Length: 96
Image (cartoon, rainbow, N blue to C red):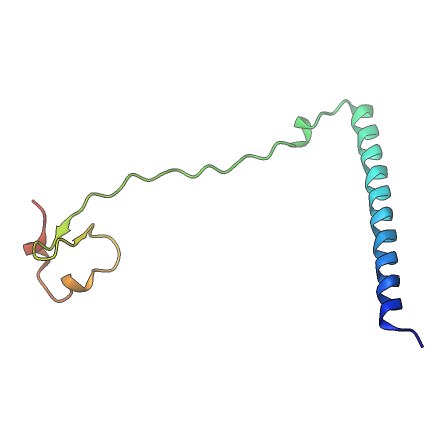
């Protein structure tokens, strides 16, 4: 009967073999790609090798539109209305 430790040793050996095979296959694939690129005079740029980096535009802060003078809390008028403004007339809190 095979023990747990023997199975672990076999797994480790197989993982090493698989990694070696992977590295060999990658090297062969690179050689094939390089040969084809040389044959047709292609460059990495021809393949679209440089991925465009998505730039995130920074947004300007939105000016405050409403202010509760009693607490100093503010709201821009965007999104859900804060609790201090619920059920009240927004016009009286409007910053002029």
